[in-house]
Length: 215
Image (cartoon, rainbow, N blue to C red; front, side, top):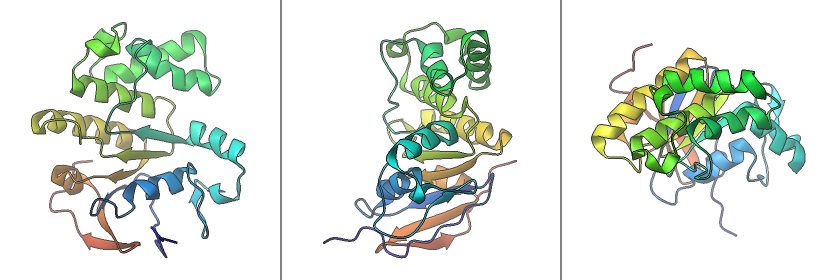
């Protein structure tokens, strides 16, 4: 049996941004899946916002994840049959917020990422950077206490990544959202409060970020 993580201890304070680095195949994406309850660990515990995720059954983990965690991925994962605002609003509807209230909240967060004018656009008409900003809005519209981001700038060129990164971090910090980011992006690592390296199944404090993002 191949062990991906062993004694990988991680404690993140509310509102803190932590970047996790490591070689390909070191288990970074698995770590995010364990935190969110998508994967179930053979041992140990995961607690989020005072709730023990590892003690929940699969249906309870799904509901908890939907309400308490936002996700941003490398490849956006937007629904092409829905327009921009509908992609964002879907998260609220899944959490029981509907109608005018859901639309108003969706438009507000789209405004925060500079895309209110594109609310009725088809997502495939957007640039890669715009699609990732929609994904960020979708991840934060329900104001989850935790945001998990897996290589959020990995599918963007350097200039576009430099535009998307401030949107991600400023929205999260304005909402006091805890952020755990898996990344190879040096700028993302520098913007984090802490940088950890996943190596041989364990997390190691790599260094203090060279440049701290303004708060």
